[in-house]
Structures are given as C-alpha cells and as structure tokens.
Length: 87
Image 1 (cartoon, rainbow, N blue to C red):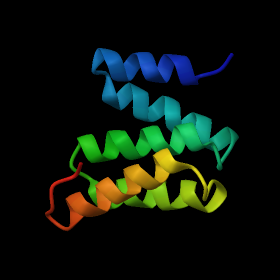
Image 2: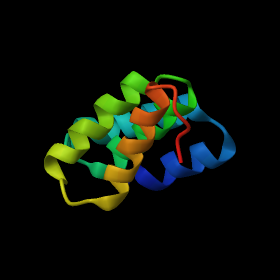
Image 3: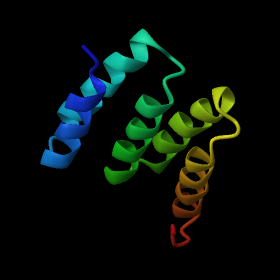
Image 4: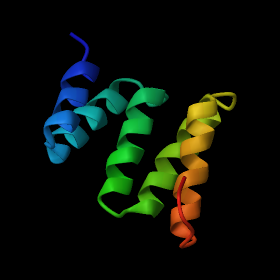
C-alpha cells in the first residue's frame, strides 16, 4: 500500500507530525521520491524551518531538475529564507 495518500490526509487534517513520519518512511523506501521530498519541504516550511525545506527541495531538484513545481517551491523557500515575501 502506498503511504502517499495517508500522508496527504494527515496534512489536510493538520496532523503534520504524523505526515512528516509518513513521508520520511516513503523517503527511506525511495530517496528520490519527489512527492515525499516536496511534502517534507512543505511541512518544514510550515513549521518555520526554511533551511530544512530548502535541503529537501535541493535534493529533489537533483533527481528531477525539470520539475517546474519543485523549482517554484525552491524559489519560494529561498525568498522566505532571505526575508522576502514568498509568492
């Protein structure tokens, strides 16, 4: 069974710690899972950990350099880290 759906449900329900655990398990199974990396970045940023979010997104971009969503999210996180307004 894929853990992605339960992880997304946890996010929607506000169970961010549970969602982090789900996506970390997915990452253990497949270290290049772009969905898991992106969601971990989202959860990290939501918790104010923009440096951690950037690490996840940079890792995702290494395996998926042409993914526009990852690029956009990375740009947003970097803007937030620099104190600018993330769009």
